[in-house]
Each structure stands twice: as C-alpha cells, then as structure tokens.
Amino acid sequence: MVMKDFDTETILRDYDRDGVALVRKLLSPEEVRAIRAELDRYLREDLAFKPVDARTFEADETTLRNLWRLEVHNDFFRDFGAREDLHALIKPLVKGEPVLAGVETFNKPARIGSGVPPHQDNAYFCQTPPDMLTVWIAIDAVTEANGPVTYVKGSHRLGPLPTKPSGVRGNSIGLAGMPAVGKEDLLVALLAPGDATIHHCDTIHYSAPNTTDHPRLGFLLVFRGSHTTTDPGLKATYSAAAAATPPA
Ligand SMILES: O=C(O)CCC(=O)C(=O)O
Image (cartoon, rainbow, N blue to C red; front, top):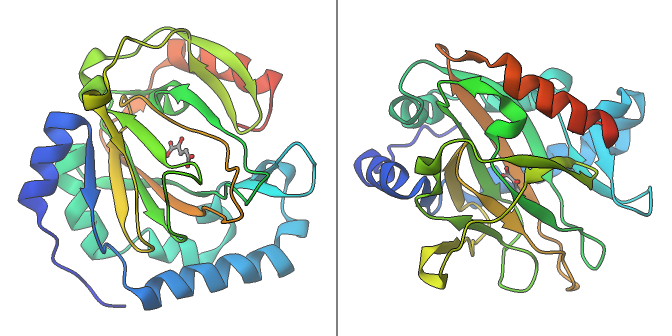
C-alpha cells in the first residue's frame, strides 16, 4: 500500500466553505483495479452468503444497486478503511479521531441505475454533533450523462432540514423540500477513476438515473469523529423511513 500526502490545507478549506471537497487522484490506477477486483470477487463468491441487508437491488431485483457494510463483511475493505493516510486526511475534517462507520458502493449500472433523491446523509447517520463525512471514490469515469453526484455548496451550514420517506430502496429518506438554489451553487462531480469527493453529512446531494451504456460505480467510505453520538430523535425518524423501504 502506498501512503500518500494529500493537500490537506486546500481540502480543509474547500470542505469548510462548501461542505464538499474535490480530491483528484486520491487513488492510483492500481488501487482502483484492486478495489474493482475485490468487489467482483465478493459479488461472485461471498454475497450470496451474506444477510439481505448487505445489498440493495435495482427494480429488476437482479442488478446490484448498492453493497452495504463491507467493513463488516470483508477484510480487504475493512483494512482499506484503516489506512493511515486516509485517517490523517480525515482527522481535521471530522474534528477528532476518525472511526470507520461504513464501506459501501453506489453501482449506478448502465441503463438500469436508478436516481438518488436529494438528501442529507445525517438523516441516515443520525449523529450529533454532525462531524461525519463520506469519501466518494470513482471506480468508473463519472460523466454529465451517467448520473454524477451533484452537491449543493454551502448547504452543510443549513443544519438538519425537514425530511420525508422517499420510497426509494437504498435511499429511504429524502428532503421534504429542496431549498432554492442557482446553478452556481452546485458542484457536479465529474470524476476520472481514482478521483474522489469528500462531503459533510449535512451537505445536500443527489444523482440522476443512468441512461447511458456506461456504468458509474462509486466506492464510499464513511467516517465519523469518535466523539459523536446517536441522536434518538433523528434515529426514530430514520428507522420509520427505512422500515418502509428496507434495508437503508
Ligand atoms: O452515488 C450516488 O449516486 C449517491 C451517493 C450518496 O448518496 C452519498 O454519497 O451519500
């Protein structure tokens, strides 16, 4: 494993200002290949033996939409989430000792991949204070057409906004309403394989269905600061939404 020095000053500045920071070349082509190879192997050999909440399928009940809890189900991905260089990068952003809270995928398969409704992740994570974030790493190229994640810059400062159950499997809770935003407020994350974004858990984001012939696989690592705790009110709202469209 190659340990890296990242431009932490720029990343911290962008993250604080916008609630999202773009990190080009977070991973090398070899690292991207290794992640893809292990995901393929896990799908072929392991997934069938895991509990149903280890994944979400698309509406066809066959094509994979998400993998969940890879840090629980797979040593390679748990070890990946323990990388010292990632923890050093994450530490100032979560304002404390990073704790790996999730390793997952958003597969957005060609032609079939569904959209993700506008949401704030802390409606799922339910942490207080909201010192939690997601590192979203492109395994495939992300283009305008294959469903890039779009972030509303600065929305992390709005705090928790009203939610409603979305009825979308894999994204069971969304915003009750979208605040008025201009094009200039949006970061559309167009990424080459190995590029990443890091977004705060209160940053509004969403993605469109994939109508192209090109898959858009995202590999996600979720971290919180060790000082955060679960907010019972947020948790009750989330549990009701997730129960309507399990598992997430
Ligand atoms: O990959 C996507 O389309 C959505 C990802 C997402 O919701 C997230 O990173 O929290």
